[in-house]
Length: 52
Image (tube, rainbow, N blue to C red; front, side, top):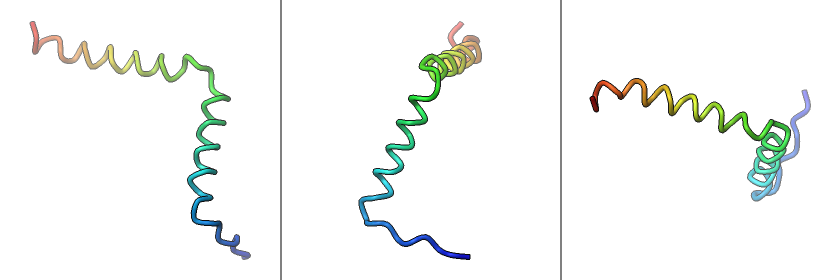
């Protein structure tokens, strides 16, 4: 099994940022917002008895 050569010190972060942005660009823009809204709504529902 051949090991890949070590990258320059600043390389992995740049590659990771590119991968993250490419992933975000490929996903529908509302998917993250929708899941966050669902999570926030579930949190509010769970906390409602505390504030009532």
